[in-house]
Structure formats: structure tokens, C-alpha cells
Amino acid sequence: MALETDRRTRKRLARRRELLDIAADLWDEGGPEALTLAAIGERADLTAPSLYTYFPSKSAIVAALQRDALEVLAQAAREAVDAWSAPDGSDPHVVALGRLVAFSDLTMRAPTEHPLEFGLQQRLMASPGLEDPNDAAGVLPAAFEALAVPAALIDQAVEARAVDATDPETMLGAADSSTVRAVRWLAALHGALAVDALPVGVPADGHTMGRLLTCDLLRGWGADAERLVDAQALADDWRHR
Image (cartoon, rainbow, N blue to C red):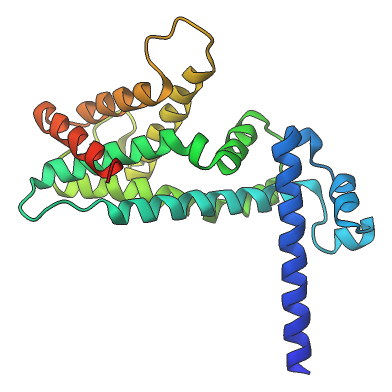
């Protein structure tokens, strides 16, 4: 009996994965407008009542896609960070700053290296109301897991004294933290990526703008200018290994 239950569970999980893959394809082909329960059911050869046993609404499907996308992006970031090692005796300030610069570059490459996952996040930010509040709340753990990667890099830089710690006397006060810093940083980088959509007249591409923006931000957080130059060289070295 237990074996039969396990088999049914595996079969159901595989079917759910298939439905999410179909939903991702529909989103990739036509954006949120193309993602409908009817379209998913047609491609999966599944009746509406059967589909509802997996996902009760479009909002539930969007939330599941968002969780998957965040998990993919977070895992890619963790694997990249693990590979950013410096020789023994390296300046810890430079290494900490180099990891922040390298993470910035990684974020700016996301549209080409992870187009589906990154595009999903961008469209969701530009299309409020696609998710029911309860479904959106279910995405938060995955979002915080993804944010934990840059937040940890910021914490490491603070610990190495490569950047200043958050100051309770600032306008944000005690509400400021490495996580809040990470949110501000990523929001700015996403804005820099919009530069690539402009037709003419932009002096630099999105990737370059992201690097400049991150360096400006790190200087504002107290990073030493000369060490930041060395950090950029280190980030470039990691990228081309």
C-alpha cells in the first residue's frame, strides 16, 4: 500500500512539473496574457476540473513559477559566489569588494544567462495584480532566500571593514540592514538594465552602467577608491576563469 501511495505521489509531482513547464512556455511565448488555465489544459490534454486539482487559479500558477524562478536565480548566485576565491594573502578589503562587484556583474548577465527566470521577475514587477495576496505571500520565503545571497556579501564586506556598517543615525535608522541595502542595490541594477532597451543616445550599455552604479554605491557605503579599482580587476579575473 505504501509503495502504491509513493508511486501515485511521484506521478502527481511529475504531472505538476509538466504543467509548470507548459505554463513557463506559454509565459515565454506571450507573457502573462498568454498564460491561461484554458491554454495550459489544452496543451496538457487535461480537463478544467482535473487542472484545478493541481492549481486552483492563474494566480497560483504564477506564484509557483515565481518561486521556481527565484530558486533557479538564487542557486546560480550561490554557485557563482562559491567559485569566487582569492589567493592566500589577498587583501580582505579587495576580496570583499570584488565579490560585490562580481555579484553586480552576475546580475547584469541574468537576462542573457537566465532569460526566462529573469524575464518572469521583470514582468511580474511591471504587472501588479497578477497574484492573489495569499499566493504572493507564499513566494516570500523564496524571495528572502534569493536576497540572502547579496545580503551575506554585504555583511562580509562590513565585517572586513571594506564598507561601513549601517548607521542608526541615518534617515532609515534602525530599519536599515544588509537586506534593505540588498533590495536598494538590486532595484537600482534592474533600473540600469532598462538602459539596454533605449534605442540611441546612451553613453554606455546596461552592463557598464550596472558596474558604474555599483561602484558609486560602494563608494557611498565607504569603500576605498583604490581598493575598489583592484576589486574590479579581481571580479574581471573571476569572470574570465
